[in-house]
Image (cartoon, rainbow, N blue to C red; front, top):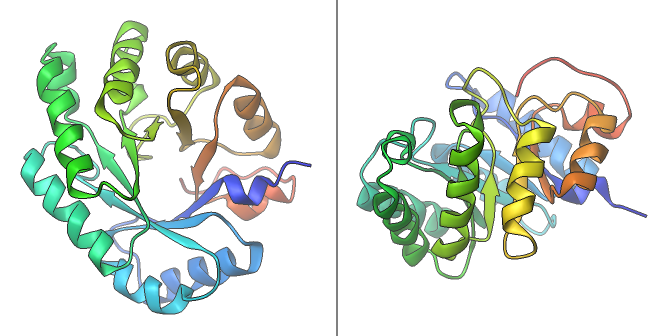
Length: 221
C-alpha cells in the first residue's frame, strides 16, 4: 500500500509566517509523519529543535521565489541551511536565463548549489507556469545533467502550480534518472494519484491533511 504521507513535503512559505503558523505546521508534520516540512531558511534552526527524533525532515527553499540571485549566493544559502539543520534543499533556477537559451548558465547555477551540499537531496524548481513544452523538456535534461536528485514544478507563487501535463512532459525526459516533485495547485487525493501514475514521486503542498483525508481544498499552496 502506498504511503502517501511519506511523499509529502508539508509546506508553509508565506512571507508573514508567524511562530504560531510554524508550530502548527511542525505539529501536523509529526502527527501525520510527512516526509519533510518545507520552510524558509530563518525557520530551519527552530524546526530542527522541534523535529529532533521525530523522523520528519526539513526542506529549505533557496533563491526563492524568483531564482534571480547569483549562483554563489544560492550556494551559500544552501550550505548555511544544511548547517542549520535542513536535510533537503529546493532551489529556484534562473528562469530568465533559461528562456534566453543560456543553458550553460542554468546548468552551472544548479551545479554550484549542488557542490555546496553534495550529501543532501537537491530539488530544482523550474516554474512550469512560465515555460512552454520545449522549455520544460530542455530544463528537465539540464537538471539530469546537473547531478541534482529532483526536478520540481513550481514555487507556488506563480499563476498556477503543477499540472498533470507538466508531470508527463518531465517524466518522458527524466525516465528513472531523476525524481519529480509536483508543487502548488494540488487540491485533492485524486489529483495526487493521477500525478503519481504520471511519474511524480514527491508533493509540495500546504493542503496536505485535506488531501490525505480524501477531501478537497482550494486554500493555500
